[in-house]
Every structure is written in C-alpha cells, then in structure tokens.
Image 1: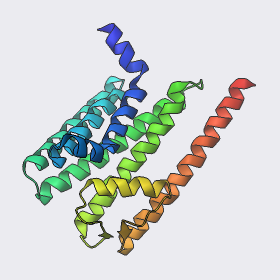
Image 2 (image 1 turned 120 degrees about the vertical axis):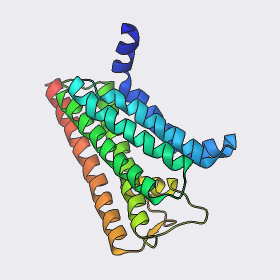
Image 3 (image 1 turned 60 degrees about the horizontal axis):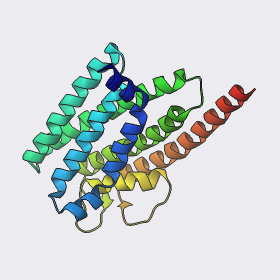
Image 4 (image 1 turned 90 degrees about the vertical axis):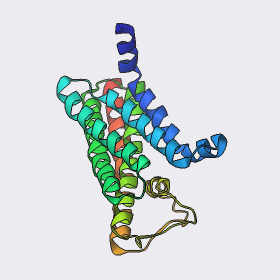
Length: 216
C-alpha cells in the first residue's frame, strides 16, 4: 500500500498528463474501436477527473476536490444517460469549470513550493497548459449552449469540437474550420489567445529564472 502511494505521489503529474493526452486522442479511439462516441468521451473525461484528483494531497484539499469530482461525474454520466437535456449539460459545464479551476489552483500551489528543477517541475507547467485548454473548451461549449449561433461549426461536430478549438486557439494555430461569430464568442477567443501566450511567456521566464538561481 505504501509503495503504491509513493508511486502515485512521485508520478502523479505524468499519470495525469497521460490521461489528458488520452482525452485529446478521443477521435482516434472512436474510429479505431467503433464504439459510441458519447461513451468514449464520457469515459476519457472521467479518467481525467479521477487521475487529476491525485493533485489533492492534503486533507484540506481532498475534501472539496473529491466533492466537486463526484458531482461532476454524476452530471457527466447523467447527461450521457439522458442526452439533449440542457439542465444536465449546464450542470456538467458549471461543475467542470469549478473542478478544473480547483485543479489549476492545486497545481499552482504545488509548483510554487518546488525548489528544484526536475521532471515534476517540467511536467507541472505542461499540465497547467493542458488544463487551460480544457477550461477554454468548457467556456466555449457553455457559450454555444447560451447561444447556438455563437460559432460556425463543421458538419457532424460534437462537444469535443469546442475543446479542439480551444487548444488550437491557445496555440494560435487557427485553422479556420471553427469560427466565432458573435461578439461574446469572439471576445472569449481573443482573451484565451492572450492568456495562452502570456502563460507560455511566464512559465518560460520562471523556469529559466529558477534554473539560473540553482546553478548560481
């Protein structure tokens, strides 16, 4: 038991990163397995929530994290069982936003306490960037829920499309296959683009500064 706990503590960032990348590969899972797309999305999203809960190490952090995680999972699976229910979708988006914001706060607190540049210090900021993309996808999906004319979407798009758009936005790729149409959607896209670039610049600066301090 102690060995398992030590392993999870030492490699928690790597475990969470693998689960997030697994979620990003959802379209490949769907095409390879042939399973119902909604089921695969729900399973992969549930895996992220379960593994990200490893970030909560203290009792004070575990209680709100586990409660938010449980409520989010309830809404996710309820929406899967009863699709096209706006109340469940709204609940899922709201709880997901609170949960991943909580994950970001936990991550930042842990990174600020690190005094050595090691693998965990490298993986932590990368995980934060991926969390930023997921939060952006949640906000884009919520914007579309409030106004179905917010985006011009590809044919046969799904909720995953908003997460895809979020990640190509924060990386400033912008393929143009998803287009924000309303003022609110455009503003949100610009804000997310700026935050994404600011985040990268800040992380690089902190990383170099800490590396120089350690070497000196």
